[in-house]
Structure formats: C-alpha cells, structure tokens
Length: 159
Image 1 (tube, rainbow, N blue to C red):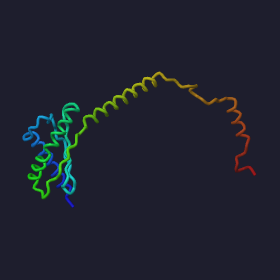
Image 2 (cartoon, rainbow, N blue to C red):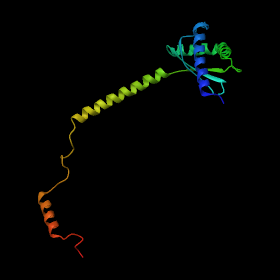
Image 3 (spheres, rainbow, N blue to C red):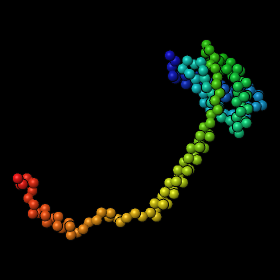
Image 4 (cartoon, rainbow, N blue to C red):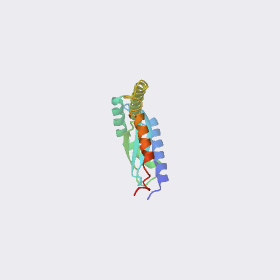
C-alpha cells in the first residue's frame, strides 16, 4: 500500500514535469496555448491522468490533443526518469473543461437572479385574494357562547 502523501507528491511532480517539457521541449506546431492544470496518479503509481486547458476553439483543442498524444512517449520517459520509479506511469491526457462549466453555472445563477427579481417585483404589488380576516366572526354569537358556558357546570361536577 502506498502512502497517500507520497502519491500526492508524485502527482504534483508529474504536473510540474509535464508542464516544463511541454513548454521547453515539444516543438509541435499543433500545440496551442496549453496550461497543465492538474495531475492525478493511481495508488499503485502505474497510471497518471494529466488535465490541461487550451486557449482557443474546438479546432485548437483537437490539434493540441493530437500533439499531446504524439508526444506521450517522450513525456512518459521523461517523467519515469525524473521520478525514479521502477515502472514509468502511463500518461492519459484529459481536457479540463472547468471554464465551460464555470460559464454554465454563471448563466444559471444569472437566470435565478432574474427569476428572483421578477418574483419580488410581483410580490410588491400583490394583494390577498380575500379579506385580511378570512374567517367570519359574529360578535352576537360570541356573546351567546359565553353566556352558555357560564350556565353549564364544569365537566367534573356533572354526573
């Protein structure tokens, strides 16, 4: 069993190494404006997932994915040598779409704020459907009920 702290250190080191190699050694023209955002490695240190973002449209993302796929062998050997592990971890590159998710959540929050503002606007001019006191209370009946209660003996006195 591998220590979780060791796994985190190796994942951080993989992220740094891949970012460094992508910046300095890969000269593929298909590689766009890429940022390595995170890396995760399995507990057995055999498989690593590297998350990245690309500035640009879908074509730039696809070309960057192809460039990373073609450079995967060089990146794996560099990571394996630097980590000094018995087995070099296999690298899997995953496009990190956090920015798209953030934009979607911001749009949903804006819609919710707009709906809340509309509800508050409608509530400001709203009135009750009926009278403020919906139950009919006859003052004469209340007095008659009080008189009957005085004449009736308490339940403990009745036999």
